[in-house]
Image (cartoon, rainbow, N blue to C red):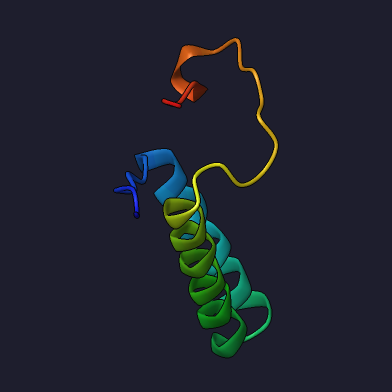
Length: 66
């Protein structure tokens, strides 16, 4: 089973900024590897949503479904 992943606008902005930093400061290869690794990690959590440590958040926008 794999859950559908929703990427918030803020998360997308963060990913783009990080990609651009790697591209501008290092090279295209590292920037592309960053995106590949990010996508792999997202897919892994979508396939195995119980991975990791359960956390509690006070801010409601960070509280996910169980």
